[in-house]
Amino acid sequence: MIKKIETPTLKTERLLLKPCCVEDSKILQNYFNNWNIIKNINAHVPWPYPENGQADYYENVLKPEIEIGNLIVWTIFEKEKSDTPIGRADYRLNIQNKDTGERGFWLAEPFWNKGYMTEAITALNNYAFDVLDVGKMTLTNFINNQASRRVKEKTGAIYLKTIEEPWRDEIRKVEIWELRAENWKKFREK
Image 1 (tube, rainbow, N blue to C red):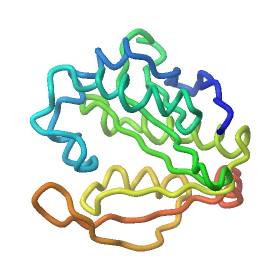
Image 2 (image 1 turned 90 degrees about the horizontal axis):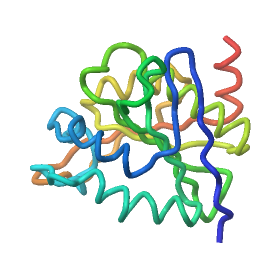
Image 3 (image 1 turned 30 degrees about the horizontal axis):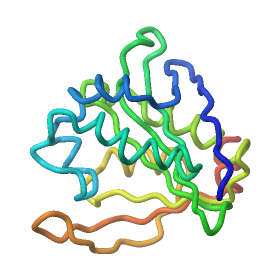
Image 4 (image 1 turned 180 degrees about the vertical axis):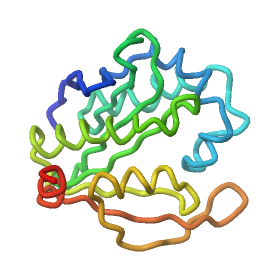
């Protein structure tokens, strides 16, 4: 069993990334219940989105994974409004190979196009590579999710390939990216 990692609060110029909790999930519900967000997330997310979906997801999916040490989850806040969450970011450790993992995120639509997610992901990458000593991350996005692709490009990820996978009643193209520690450190120095 992996030792549970205590999720630290990460600070950036404009943001706070705090350990995720159920209270945040209840507030995030209003933002997440939005087709413009859900259409860019895996098909396991139901639509229409249930009334208590974020709290249920926290209690039944995130919390158990956090408790066994497979997942680190942050709720994103603007520093000046540190009582209202605006999104979420996570890092999933690979149980078989602790040197690798996956990163995910979403941001409430009113906060798009402000550079917030790039700022949040920079802090998450610093933590994963500098503190956890991760060797590489695997990252994905639907091919039509330009914003997610742009965050990857702006934070040094390398595009590997595009695959197809089922999504609801269609087949979607998914881009696969990789970010290695050495690439991140070189990229960060620029």
